[in-house]
Length: 245
Image (cartoon, rainbow, N blue to C red; front, side, top):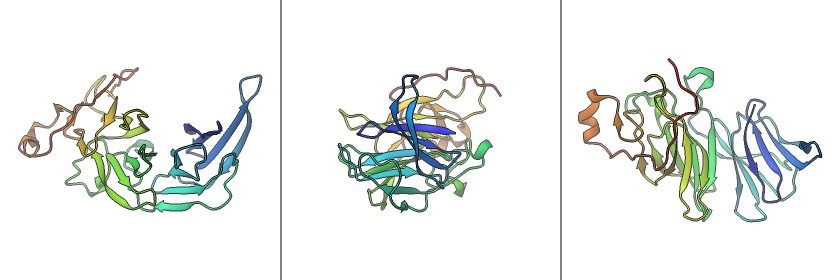
């Protein structure tokens, strides 16, 4: 089950095969339009998803991989088709797995800030819409966590964003962006998924609001009115297929 592709600076394509637990490298193109070679860079990983090369530039020294419950890194030099040593665990304790069908939000994306000083790891919710204040399984979930490149936890970078994937940094502004899988169960075409910039320390509404400002649970209005202001996504789109109950 290949889930995501990232290009190395030399043009090799690294593919996370989450179901197989492996990281593949595709190199070159045949006349038939297929990869000339496919190599297994690493195997035995736990639902790998996020891939990030560090530091930025033509000769990164590490490949960081977001597993379901950890972030690991491999020593890397340009052109490597297979890991030369075992991975180093950088973050050993990401909140992992969930109660949703199929294992829930296990994808962990990884990206570095434009100055290479901050590692931003997205962690999806463990449920459809459980209150994080009363459900310990939602601790440090439905948000983006900030670490140093060495794996030291810094803070919750943004929260209330149900499942932020496809993380990317705007090369001009340095702003973090991602696509978000929103909550289910409110009817056809609700709630729309969206793509948004992600502001540092921002709150994006989940589980009490959707699209940042549309309230779902009026029963909790006193709590919400005294809490942080929810941000409207900067850019969004409706799903390309209708949702049904």
